[in-house]
Image (cartoon, rainbow, N blue to C red; front, side, top):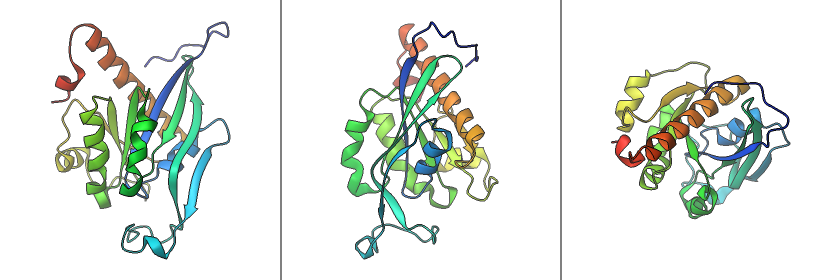
Length: 203
């Protein structure tokens, strides 16, 4: 999406974006990295009740988890104001996704290549609801351990769904991911207005 100087006289356009993915994939970090307001997080401490339920094998330092949502805001130079809603990752909280996705124009599905299977519920959810989305592989160690082609094949992801590598800790990387998502959502919207069905474009 081309960035143009924002005209102060122009009313900002609000855009709702979901940030989704499995448990401990970096959703809270992603939202906090770019939020221009104090992020709202609903973190709760992990307790013995989560033993055997939440897989922390690759997350030895993780002591808390999102139990409701994360919220942040980022303004683009084009005048779009992105309202970011991070979804809870554990299956027992998926009942909240319908409410959180209401009115959203697109979603980022964060993926961890060590636990790719955790990405399937979010991918299936957005495909079933024809909500534009992209998959962003979060580089926890600062580098991509698998090629984009290998990840796409492992996820059985259609070529029409964007896949990119990002670092949820880096604001520039997160912003690039969000801009890519907005471009993707706008493209599908334009194609839909021309008579194409977004659901068919992703097959």
